[in-house]
Amino acid sequence: MKRLLAPGPAGTRESGGHPVSSATPAGVADAEQETGRRGTALLFRETSAGPVDHARRITDGGWECVVAHDVERARWLASVRNFGLIVLAGETLRWSRDALNTIRPLTVSPVLALSPDLDEAQAPLLRLGADMVVDSACRAELFRSAVQALVRRAVANEPVLRYLEAQGLRIDLWGRRTTLDGADVSLTPTEFDILRLLMAQAQIAVKHHEIIKAVWSWKYTDERNALRLQINRLRSKLADASGRPRFIRSVRGVGYVFDKPVAEFADDRDTAKSSPVRESVNLLLEGRLRSLTKSLIECRSRQQACAVLVETVVAEGMCDGAAVFARRPGLDILDLVAQAGMPATWQLAVAGGLPLADQFLATDTFKTREIHHYVDISKLARRYRPTVRLLRAARLPAQLSIPLIDEHGAWGQLGFARRSDSPFTTPQCMVLEAAGAVLGALFADQERRAAVS
Image 1 (cartoon, rainbow, N blue to C red):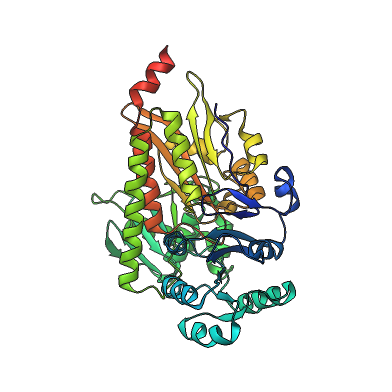
Image 2 (cartoon, helix red, strand yellow):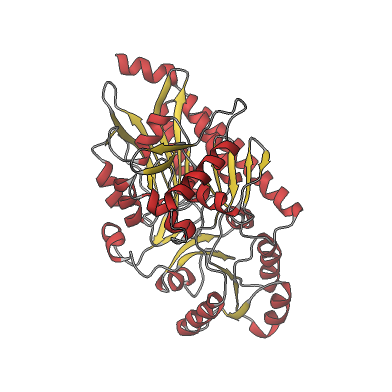
């Protein structure tokens, strides 16, 4: 099996996805840099080399750092990621102006502009949208202080969960709106809170007293009867066309369970994006999907296609880690076929394969043939304990897990992972899911003939 080289979750990545600096050796990065990371920063600089290593300053300050040198790369990254900090390192005022005009409409992230001529650049760059402008040759202490001042009052880059969705049922956590097959469903505040609680712990039996405490805070003297009444009303409103209840099932002696897989979707936090910019971003995503699809079709084998897909999406900044598993012929085990961006500890843990009977997200996706999307998988430790443990160590809680299916059935699983400060948005999920569908359908006959022989 081909061993793919990719950066771990810490350190700096150049625009091609290759590591350029790391505060610790690769083998111990996860163990020694687990704590103190502040988020992900984008460094957009005019040239690849300069008198000051700004990337090193950023990583020394506790940030992950992604570096871009060309405007298209920077524009793409600002469109698909919510960065906690953006640093523009220009050598000329003209370049800095163009960079700000490109980046500022795409994001509400704080922007620190670095310029060698502070007197000339400060006023125009502030007018164009920079949040702070400092001398590019300033001392490291001043640079760190400027970064701290910028992010101190910025909106925290945390998982921005807004929507929960399952088989036509969708709830908007912010707007407290529920739709079923596209039609609005009128729920009382209590019914909405119960549904939200059950969907947030999908396919896990939630005990009666846990629901009662979360929804009513033990307000009623006969809590079980009140809960039963609310559940019955909720089931009635979510029933199918024939009136048959769906989604919520009672577990005798325990409580209730939402028995369908639930996908989580992050809201696009950058509300500053206008409609023309959103349309432009969608065109960027469409263009990347066409390019990726073309690359997959040109591959000569499934192995090559898997490697191309994971390496491309990580190098392009669409995710921080990606992996493909395939079922071992004749056995209930998923083997790692290709990965990019995953740390050495994760690779070692899955090297022997994942048993289909275990509580892994990858094996559940394979068995159910359902797409799983989580803004933060950490809260599902009861269901995916081994997966959560590995991803918590890798600091990659945002997950998109896709079954790989051909005309004969499921043959593997494709997973994408992101750090907590930049969960996947709905358009990004659509692009990655489409890429997974293409990969799943490729080389079906070739691989099955090889398995038989």
